[in-house]
Image (cartoon, rainbow, N blue to C red; front, side):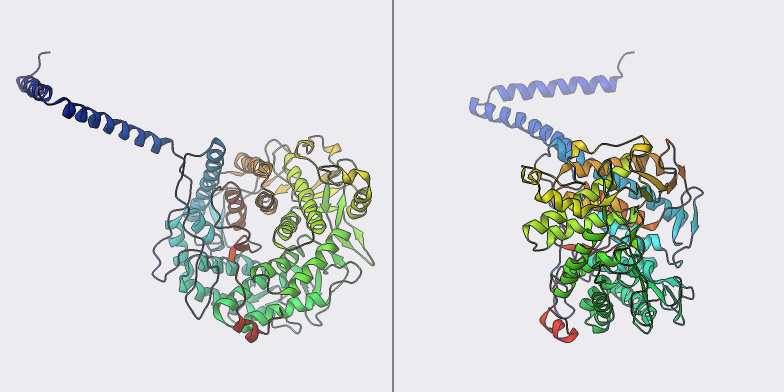
Length: 611
């Protein structure tokens, strides 16, 4: 086909112009010609390099800047003060620097995988369940199982802020603004409402300084205080906010340690924000009562208490479901308040040694370290049950070893406890065919107390060798999965995985404290198993049958999966981001970060804080 006259004319006109340009160019002085050639060559090289380097350059998945906040916040509040200007942190994420190493790029990609998992889970909840409490991930229906206040949205607020889900956060917080907590006519569980809703609101406020969030936190905090209207000042199991009616669950006059001991972080932070000493006094009274009633035989805290006479009820001692965060908050309130409350430190060191002395056992063949319950007179009888919930404990010991001014030998002991317990929590996942850990393990009854064996080892010549490790603590190469059930030293007592966070929480803390990359690799193994076996079209599901090729999915996606499990995994894989350092924030038991502060002199005097 011949070219059209128009196209032919354009072609020949262009040739003529180029001929004139060439003649003019050749007639210029050499220095001018060389300068022009250099500039024409440099521009495409610069453009090409810039384009490719932008393509290959590492782009960390830092969250975008938070939405504009006319009330002046830029991040977590590290020295909040209700009377004067505040200083804020964290600083903005560091800008991308030099091209990352292959290792840095690997972890950035894995952090993005977790962020994508959160996006999948929350988008399913938001599309099919919001503003109800939780998504049922198999049939895309909703369920109101925690007050009907939208627990997944509130529990996820700070995760969305941390990861940069701005639009989702804005939609969720609008729901918070209009909710009437004080007028609610349903019975609300004190413990879960405190850690999920109250903690979630305070953490989101700490990040945004949104006064509406502080007002909602105060409203909810005042509402929850109604549950403390008992003779001893301990909370009852649940309350109906509209009329203040209280309800029990655990039996006559009974409250569990986890309920009464897991409010100190939230209320002390609120007291600091508002200057209201009632918040401090109510929860410090409980801590003082707990401290005064530490069992003299075991140096432990009873699992059940009497909310009439204020005394321990029975001799069951646990680090699991009945008691876990009651122990956790003893250390964390000391850290949150800038290490000013010395009584809390004294209390933590006492019960920490009680745990080491009485609740830690070692299995007979594999030498797995685990924590169990004891019940009965004297030192009690062990159950040999290790709960998934108890896997928070190694992280607590590691946090204490990292944060406290311990003697070298005591610090090393706490780190070994943390290491050995986290290894067992991890191996409980790796042993299973699915790679997901069971809710409860029943250990061999031939297991024995660990601390006596540790003391024997400590006096032996083996302990004096370079790199020596005590019983129950292994080198990474020596910690191997056991697929044959009869050789594990334990059986699965509850063969379900409920999307729980405790193991990855301790793995995250171990990574932050030790810097050992093996913890990140183990965390990624767990995340891959979660992706393989719990992901559904609409979200993620708890599963049963963890020691099978294909566990059976259950129709449940707890809010803590988004608030805790995915948050800790994301933080585990993050590099070059110190905004959530263990020296800057304290995570409540629902993984809501609260900024560390120090009581001011006027607060110490007004609240009568012993220091």
